[in-house]
Image 1 (cartoon, rainbow, N blue to C red):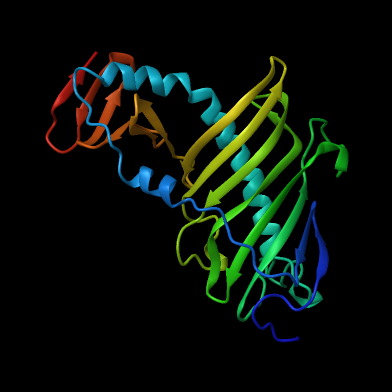
Image 2: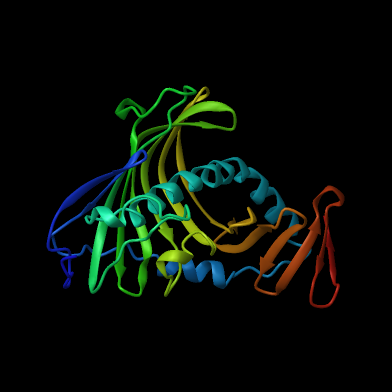
Length: 268
């Protein structure tokens, strides 16, 4: 295998399922800065109290449909990333090993992948078709693993979302974490931000949403009351808010939240 030094010294296009991964000889691009968004998930700014808990609840419900759309898009993004990480210019690095497991790219130095994935479309069993639109992603890496931010675009990407046909257009960014090795992708939570438009049976509307999703399916997202925010979380068994004054577990049907740290309660 030809050694890699710095950025990729060759350019290849490899078909992997419904994806192509191209290793570019161009300079490694600078990813979008997601540090402010990442910090906002770590440090909610609103303290929940009797004056605002109802407003936080109502705000969380008002954006829940958009969040669910983002949650449903994430597997498509992750599949495209997986396909790129398991394709290499050396044919021996493509496909499955003898035990059926995927082989990740084998690199030294620093580089990036350009991944083009055809979207699944809305017809069952239709096969790959560029008319279904695409996801195009840039994945930076070093020999230690994946760079923290993966980014790209949805290009008239057609899916079945919520049981109905839909098309997504716009930018996507995904924070996968620091020091993530190739084989750990998909095993850690990812923070996804989408800024674009969604077209479905009700028409076209803006889609600007961010959420953090765990491999278990648990998710969380920001909820704003004025200029301050809490984090709404749902671990599929319980749900509540992470606020500046602690973590609250809520019984939403009873309109009651209890702070985990001291059992203080808020009702609305």
